[in-house]
Amino acid sequence: EAQVTQNPRYLITVTGKKLTVTCSQNMNHEYMSWYRQDPGLGLRQIYYSMNVEVTDKGDVPEGYKVSRKEKRNFPLILESPSPNQTSLYFCASSLDGENTDTQYFGPGTRLTVL
Amino acid sequence: QKEVEQNSGPLSVPEGAIASLNCTYSDRGSQSFFWYRQYSGKSPELIMSIYSNGDKEDGRFTAQLNKASQYVSLLIRDSQPSDSATYLCAVNPDSSYKLIFGSGTRLLVRP
Image 1 (cartoon, rainbow over the protein chains, first blue to last red):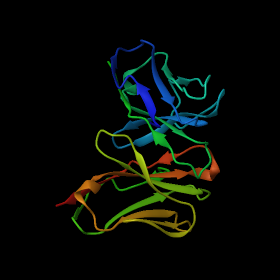
Image 2: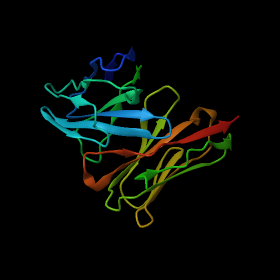
Image 3: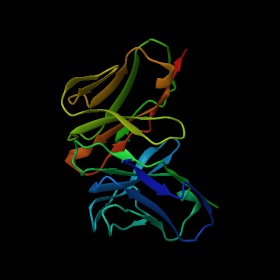
Image 4: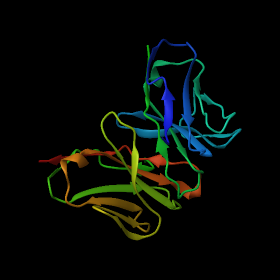
């Protein structure tokens, strides 16, 4: 089944404790992206990747890191999480980044930073 | 000014009516426009995309684009309770790889 998976789905952590949220897709997509969703603010893009080893900042990259060492994986790293990073996070992928493309979203990761 | 603006709603319509959802965007160079549907607690799913001025129909859904007015809308005909969800407008500005989302309009279809 073609899908985007994220782990963990739920995470409660404390300020400053490094964490990684994994994202994997099995559709051989070149383009992958991370979003956070907050009430009243909608989905905001954190980082995106056009292909292996090619990443770029979205609108809200501060406090986050990403890497794209393999085509299928695009982990999101929070080196020192803070409470303002409490949010619902979505990973998405598409065949490429061209504007005609459909993005497929993962199921989401709900992160709480205490 | 937000780049993509939507009325948060809720927009309440009776079953069988036409639901009209609206979105305005600020980047005049935007090329691609999308409507996503998001059920509560679920991830967004694409329902319509539109790239040129005019109407695009797909089943009960019609997307309308007016680039001069920087306005894109989604019409849902014969609305069903199962259409109750949040509808997200998304814009691809300047053929970049970014996708800018509005904050969404919550639609409630009353049986």
